[in-house]
Image (tube, rainbow, N blue to C red; front, side):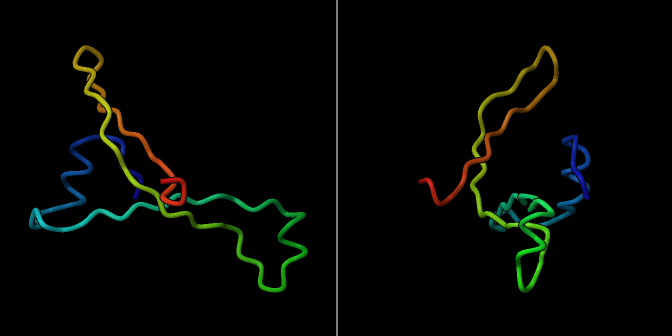
Length: 73
C-alpha cells in the first residue's frame, strides 16, 4: 500500500496502540545484468533505514520526513 496522505496513513494504522515501533526499509532495484550473474536472483536489495521528522509546511500542506540508511549512523 502506497501512503501519500495523513488520512491514508491513519487508515493503514487503524486503532493501533501508541507503543508499536516503526521499522523502515527501502528497496533498491538490481539491474538485469547483475541479476543474470546471481545464483539465486532476487530483483531487490533491502536496506533498513530510519525515519526522521523534518518539518511541516502549512502553506502547501506537506509533512516532510527524511529517510536515512541505518548502516550510516
